[in-house]
Image (cartoon, rainbow, N blue to C red):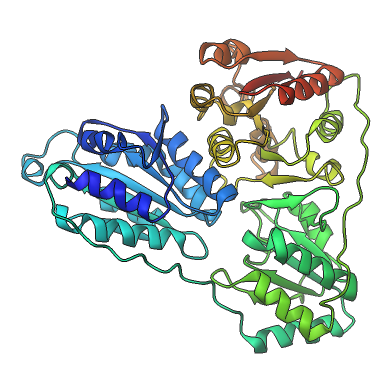
Length: 515
């Protein structure tokens, strides 16, 4: 057995099931090892698709995927979506190929400082120093990625470590570290705040927005009258009819400060207090009112479900029925396409247990309010703000949950970053409906131009914001990568296209033409 075979075997032994790959010459032995069939491999035509798909896989599967990247430039191409994954607390094992040690001294063209590239966005970086140590290094990488919250582990694999033969290596299964329990004194302090009669908002993040933790938060809200909210962007929320509803803190500073103006106490779970996404002249960075107190209940490395159980016990609310969202039957809209009709069409069309991946930016800002009472679904947002995340994350989510339909809503500017995802979706036969809002511009930048106080954009500035001349033909592009597509410009046609896409297996694209 050579080093690469040992690496693949160790990843599989530690329950890594899939590898999103964009390989090169230095990774050929790793590819050969994949022929053993223990690790599913998925080809991505750009490294940002591979790292984004690994993010989507983790968000829906709660287990890390591997990526295979070619040397420093391959890693660099994937860094934007590694950044997004890190912000979403997604676990990931990046295997980055490297030149053989004897070759590095000649400074070949692809030589780079891989550690220097990896370290700012990785929690753990290690360079394999011998084939004999690969199994131990791989086991350590998976253990790091599996920690709570999920972590980014980067393992650098020199070519000679891949091809050299190694003897049998016994690597012990590493016990997954359990999330920590919150400090009981901190829980009691929050219970005292909730008994105090002042306005309290619980802000939920990461794993607090789903499962047992979300239900417990619903019990506490029902028993105390506190408000439940999430940040504008969240890694994954279980929402829709029958689930505990969360308010969404708005994106825009003026709307967010108005939303929070009457809150006296903010209690955070696996997140921080609300902060503006950018700095704007004359506007605050912190969105809470002056005098509002922040109480961390569950820190990032702690267990939200356990923390909320402790809080419910302290308040005597363990048996209280949780708040639940009622089903809202939204009729299918007709007429012109606008943010409201788009939201209504989506709410009416989403099938049961749909996964909604949102990078719709300006067009979709009203979507979340109008889909609260839709059929039960999961919502995934871009935590890191680096655009081009949605189509890769949708790809990984569809692979993690093959029986569920994924709706990916994305602006045309964002979609161009990682449109190669469509090719992977076609090759793998994934149940993804990609919905592209085509307004032929970076519309969000027009709004930000005004928000930042830059005045009125002139002709040259507008040329950097508009993405027409030439106009992108999304349906033709999708067809070229094996994905059937349709173009719509009326609300009723948009709804019908979504419903039709969910009835048939495989990927579909809908271009929503906005004027």
